[in-house]
Length: 273
Image (cartoon, rainbow, N blue to C red; front, side):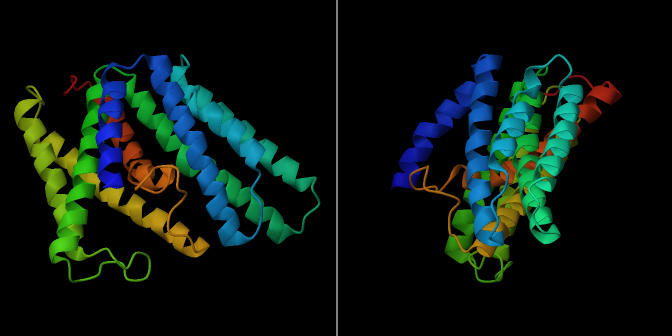
């Protein structure tokens, strides 16, 4: 019940923010989500490796990446932040005098946190702030939500064949297929009613790519949590676990959306939604 109530409250807020939120507010919320997810990631990484990531540096540069969509040249800003981040991270840990294995573990877990969490979330905001990008972003969210819900209910009702017995024992091939079909349906409906004059296959193919990436993102986080011996990334969201548990699918789906958006821009394809 708590899971349903939380969804009823959060989904309208997210939809309203994506469609009508002021750019500064939208990016600020995205940045807050990024920092919370980074906090959860660092907890998982420490539990899995036994070493403490460089949290302060991770938070500072994670925030810098999260705010990059507000810059005039987001790509230049993001690239500059990442280069400076890696240099500061490598140098700060080098002077700590740790043995090479500990040094590499700290650098890797900290860097992966920013690459895994901050960049995809920034790319999502980047697309949202572009022309018609808010509708593309909402489309992505709906594809992920519908696929996730379909996979859960189909797997729970008729799932028998485990798809990832080691990483996520409860996931089944039936649920995986159900999630994919739901995503295709969302793409087909969007193509029929919201895709304008553009080829309808674009919506369907994009939906399929987002779903595949989203399911892989879900599995990736499950693998991280299993290695750390935890069930949820945290208990911040009642009935849903942590922030990272809610955005895990988006973290791999967001780059797919960004590449699609970039392709349409480079090819001169008119706005779709």
